[in-house]
Length: 206
Image 1 (cartoon, rainbow, N blue to C red):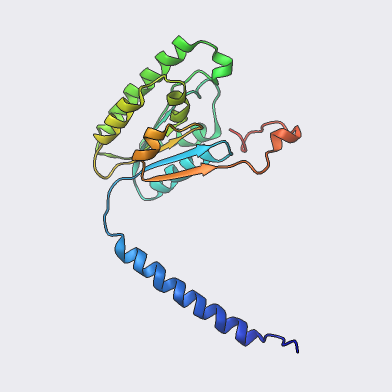
Image 2 (image 1 turned 90 degrees about the vertical axis):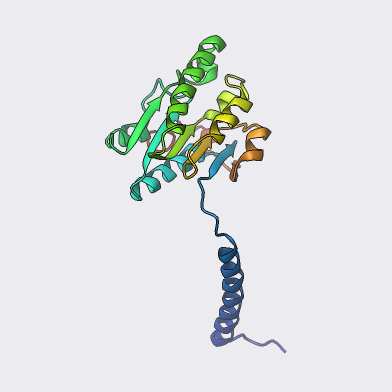
């Protein structure tokens, strides 16, 4: 005999599940008491790595934090995030220090030179306790192609102020960097408009 479940039964079971879930979440929250700057890596082939990073930049700004941004690889074309964030020079120091995608530059020596210059700017941010968050956009690409030494990058990150957060984006994050990170998210492609012949557009891709 089929029984039609009443709305009251559904609501009661839902409430019990949420009560159990709240107990578990409260236990996890109580166990997480250490407060420190975190190293976040957004990697993978899917869209959203830089978008997530810049979302955290705006979140930090909303909390009154000063932010430093260094873009590796990117730099020849102005992006929407750059145009927007340059409106807040007192809150954000923005440095786009690349010369374009590697398949366009086709000059490894020049790419290495630009990446190393960008890292000098990064080190200034990492030495400044007034900077609450640093976004290193597309750093993973520079590490993937060995424009920078990953061990030196890790060593410099380790010297940063205790409460400073660092966000690193880009495909191909090296395992050594993933090992020392606090939070790692890998973006995966399910579908992408470009594969269907839809051109990259302002506000979506840059």
